[in-house]
Length: 136
Image (cartoon, rainbow, N blue to C red; front, side, top):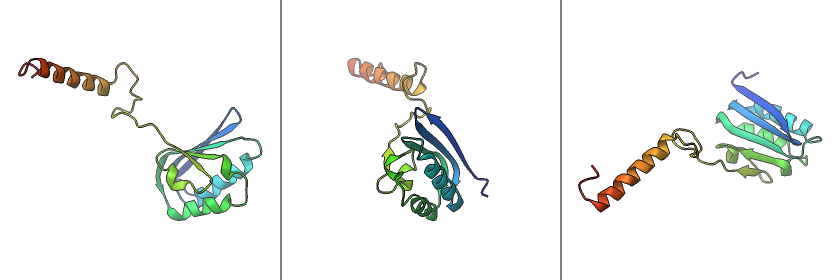
């Protein structure tokens, strides 16, 4: 068994959330397909977060697709994260992630250094327009 792969699951409001971490290889793909097939009976939707994956081996996605081929699960799978589009096949949905600021915040916090820097540069630009030479 590959120790460089980890899969965490949680249930929320009738949905299954799967967090993938590490390297997604053939054995990982078989495990994920089995989890999704078993969860299909009791979960409405299945969200697979790929942000924690460091690498996806190409044969692994083929094994995942083959493992889900003859099931009705495909229409209920949603991939999330940066590598979601690489893992999805026809019938799967991919949820785009919102881009984070340089400091990895959502941009809404009051102490965000990114926002403060933007405000300071805007202030200098306005000051420069009003009085050339004073904004420096």
